[in-house]
Image 1: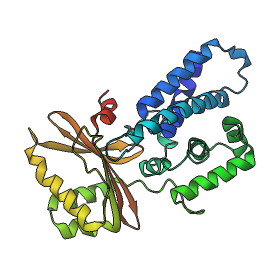
Image 2 (image 1 turned 30 degrees about the horizontal axis):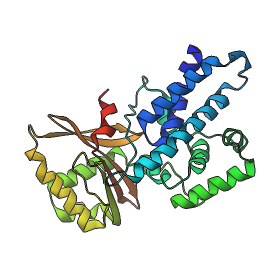
Image 3 (image 1 turned 90 degrees about the horizontal axis):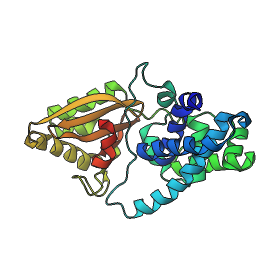
Image 4 (image 1 turned 45 degrees about the horizontal axis):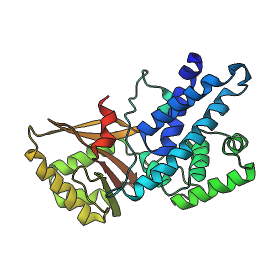
Length: 287
């Protein structure tokens, strides 16, 4: 049992996290699955990887239903919990290499649980359709249709790659430099015309209740945040780090992490910014 846990925990967490958008729910799902297989005759597990992935997918279906109800009552915009993914040998490569970009996780919220499961298993984890069919109890042909439907709902064209949205370290540095200059024109120049900023405070931290759209409003909002920074007790410290397999920003004050920022770049400009401020979604980053 310990060998199974060590071999598959990273894969199962990666799957569960992308199915739920919650690191805490993903951890619970993996723990629940390993508690349940204590009653299973391990000698009968001919395909442990497939068996465990199916159990996690089913467990996440239950979590998905309850999460949908909670999100209907959620204050403001809901964003997935961010996770640290350090680029070093101590971190399981499967989590980093088989993780969709944060922007893609946001788009996954448009899907049903089954569509989401098919998309994640195929696009992130590289499962064959025949294996996916067994995991979600659908025919192979149906899984192909579900995958195509999922891409359509997410606005992804047939030839579009889904791992290309993450901003590079160079882009994040350019973003910080533009804000440091404090010039509206400079900030506007790195934003697409239809840029969208989504901020998630959950009613527990200051955040824009609705998405902020288009260049000028987004630029003004960003520069307003910079002007407010010195008013935090002890000031704030901004650091770049690996979050969800991409370069992100962590803003800390004397009281801890204030916000995590992730950036999505397209057409050689920033088209989406995600500000996660809900302390409940940042707590696990302090572990």
